[in-house]
Amino acid sequence: MTSPITTTTNATKPMSALIGHRGLPSQAPENTAASLKAAFEQGIDWIEVDVTMAGDGSLVILHDADLRRFGQPDRTLVSLDRAALLQVDAGGWFHAEFAGEPILFMTQLLTLVRRYRLGLNLELKINPDLAMPEQVDAVIEALRPAALDPSKLVVSSFDHRALTRLRQRWPEVAIGILFGALPVDLPAVLIALKPVSIHCDQALLTAPLAAKIVPLYPLYCYTVNDSVTLATLLSWGVSGVFSDRAGAEELRQVVLDRTLTR
Image (cartoon, rainbow, N blue to C red; front, side, top):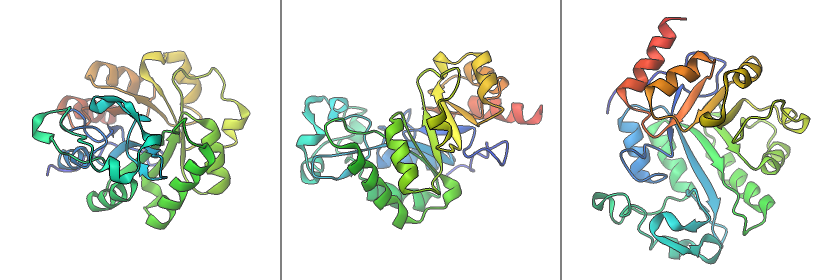
């Protein structure tokens, strides 16, 4: 294992400047145990992964509500239970080396996060085929007993209704609000969530929009895989990025250079 990437440049920022997007998907299939292990071995200290729900209520670490990423677009999560999901090859699509890699479940994720001492940005992917409140409640019921270090947990979502329920049910949890394009002004209902960070699509961000947000909230962007874009975003005051290549030396160097010039 390499040394941890110490990329948090300000103690008030909730996450590091380089966050492993779904683990380290440049090296291993996304959202799997192999991807988390690869992130750990590259010295990445924060990861972002997706959680959604299967038909039997199992919490699954997947981006989609179906199995399209595994070449099975007609199989939906709502029609599957844990036993069926355990038979799915979640790695062969990526490379033959990972053939047979199992789908990751929430309880397994939490075990790995503790083992590798990772910061966790858990993105709630609400399965549209299932009720939202039950999904949020299930995530809370899984996270609370895990007793992760609260300074190393951020829960985010594009579904702002889900975040509202999360805040109502768990007042202390750190919330990150996800957008595609940032609105010019945050709606009052979202300000009331008291987010620790705002997350948006780097391709839709402009310097003027960034300038409006960064004095108020730490701003993080997805998905950034090259040093030029990273340098530009940091110069706009962005706190950090989600990257498929979070362990890449050239990205680490950009963060280090930015820190040294401040």
